[in-house]
Image (cartoon, rainbow, N blue to C red; front, side):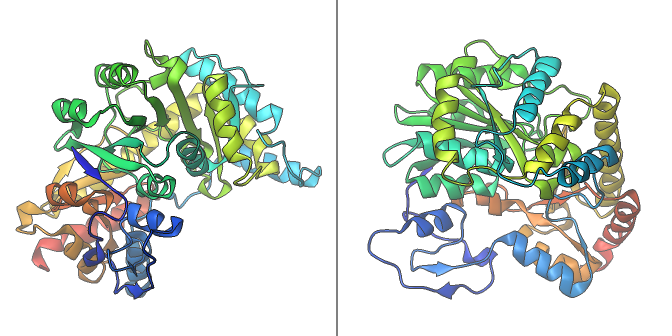
Amino acid sequence: MLRTYPMGRPGYHDWMHAPREVSAPTAPAPWQRTALGANLLSPGGGLGVTIFEEMTTLAVQTGAINLGQGFPDEDGPLEIREAARAAIAAGANQYAPGKGIPELREAVAAHQQRFYGLSPDPASEVVVTTGATEAIAASLLAFAGPGDEVLTLEPFYDSYGAVIGLSGATHVTAPLLAPDFMPDMAALEAAFSPRTKIVLLNNPHNPTGAVFPREVLQRIVDLARTHNSVIVTDEVYEHLTFGVSHVPVASLPGAADRTITISSAGKTFSLTGWKIGWLTGPEDLVAAVRTVKQFLTYSSGTPFQSAIALGLGLPDSFYEGIAASLQKKRDILSEGLRAAGFDVFSPQGTYFVNVDTAPLGITDSVDLARRLPALVGVAAIPVPVFCHEEGAQRTRSLLRFAFCKKDGVLHEAAGRLASLSGRL
């Protein structure tokens, strides 16, 4: 377990380009808390860039295949894209209602019933957001503030730390341990305290690819009930699992009245640029989040909303097909990573596979990530950037690769990676 307090820990400029020095006031400004939460600010006020920007720049400079950022290189289903074009032509180009068009809210509710047996009221328990990122931000800002603690598992998606920092709350973590990246249950229990206002849970989990089983999720729910914590679940990879089933936290005993469930169209339909997300939950919690959300973007993506409503109604064969296709991609890339000499941790879900560089005699994945584009023409993301200081040491030799790319691109990347050991 690790508690970090705003402006109370070192930055991570060893991961970034040289920082740009800025003047730092005595009390941290909101932007500074945000940057610090995302590992972008040093105690002296130096501001860095994200590891994603750095790795993408290196990929462009070297012509490397970019397996760093998790976005597909293929468009989503044609019928969904055609529906968006039709909506634009029909004049759906002005503000949508703040909580989303009724058609999409009803489709989200129907999706939750169809796949999980949950029945949110589309009128009062569903809100459409500008991607899952806004839903997460609005939820954290609605319920957490100075003096509160927000608990996440670690490694954690970088926007979590940023928004927790913005809120002024304290970010507390509990470790996920290789090779299966399941929580250390004793550390998880110890991470809860009377100040734990929110448990922010990502499942299936980015960046590790873990899919948490029912018993792990139920223990988290039980601990949240004991400490009267709100549960915010980021389930954007819900349909991208391999051989295991996704269990929504809200479906577990004791969870429904304290859980905000978040998902989006980007990952399921390979339409990340549309930024259409949603959240569901009990009316009182949803109303609180909606109050914050309406002063962030108010509404967005009007013609895309009806198109995503159509997508949510696609047959089971579509959902089964996207998972099977992605599993094949995972296996193509994993073969190349093993040939490179890495220890490969096979994920049960998401877009990502993690490897340990230690078998190659490399213990600093950040350094290797910086050299990899020039060495073999592939870019990846070092896992320590998704951690606080203690977690960064624990994951020091881990790298994350995205496999949500065309099969041909993955075969080429696998071939390049297989040559790594001879180039070190």
